[in-house]
Length: 271
Image (cartoon, rainbow, N blue to C red; front, side):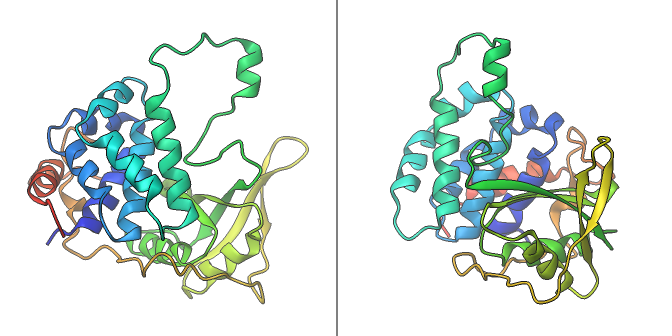
């Protein structure tokens, strides 16, 4: 059975793959549904929706379509002004809003502009208040282990966003700069079946794994986001549309998950 959280999390995972972004925006049900989710009362649904929109906005041709979508800009404005939300949600809403409001024909890129403009991933990529950490996670072998890892990371206060590269057993985590990396290792180790090492480059430019001390590190708990709901066995992930491909995922010819999700989104006007 579909619910708001499972649908938006699946859309977020699909949108994380660049080849899927145009298909999602062109679908007649997904974008209007995401606008509806911007008014949801569950902070976790809000955050996942903003992550999805941020992914979709990475494709330049999607931006003008998203901008004129009925209710998109107004809902983002309301979300930015809404009280009682976490700083991470508000910051991500502001970033998505600013991307959609950017001029349609920005100034041409020059080498000097490229030096100043680093690739952004979700929120505040060039802000010294946030940093990215790449982890190699032992035991990350299936969607079940991935769900455990997601649940552990979502409970850590200061985690902004994360994406998985299942084939290489890696997770790229965006965190606040004052959050120790060891806190991530401690949270992941709390699953009892996973452990994490940090991936860094040495002086020769080669990637190496750095062990992280997961013993005794303080893990600030995230009180603003409720417990993550892991994917159930009947997860719609098994019915991914043939038109959409996912890394390390097999397509299921028995049905179209995207069509089912779009139907759910367009029929769900309140929760």
